[in-house]
Amino acid sequence: MLSVLENYLFDNVDNISAQIAADFRHRRVEKGLTREQIAERAGVALSNVARFEQKGLISLKNLIMLAMALGYTSEIKGVFATSKYSTMEELTQIRQNSGKTKAYKK
Image (cartoon, rainbow, N blue to C red; front, side, top):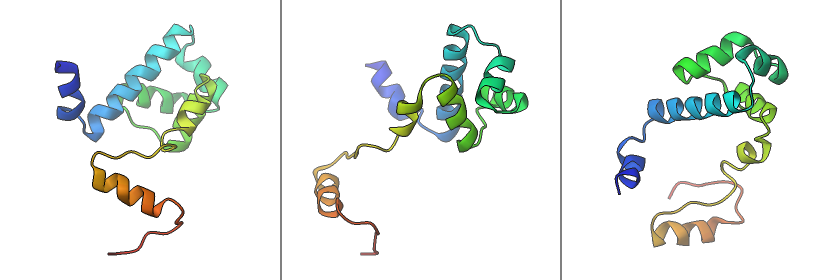
């Protein structure tokens, strides 16, 4: 129950960034790669890898390059791949707008 509550109580940019950075570091260490090795493999500056792991700060392009270097291409590509909704009204709106390419003010 607490883990479910954590997903809602602690969702802010800084906490999510820190969690993504911690997960990245864990995956990197699991594969036995140093920061220098992953930076070289991804084509990302070592300072960017260090800043990401320590502060959770990274550009989207560098995050994608690091994800690809660790073999997480499909996961990073799939971030916005599926629709998300929390109410029936949102689901109805998603279905109504599914073929549209632009959003308009109501």
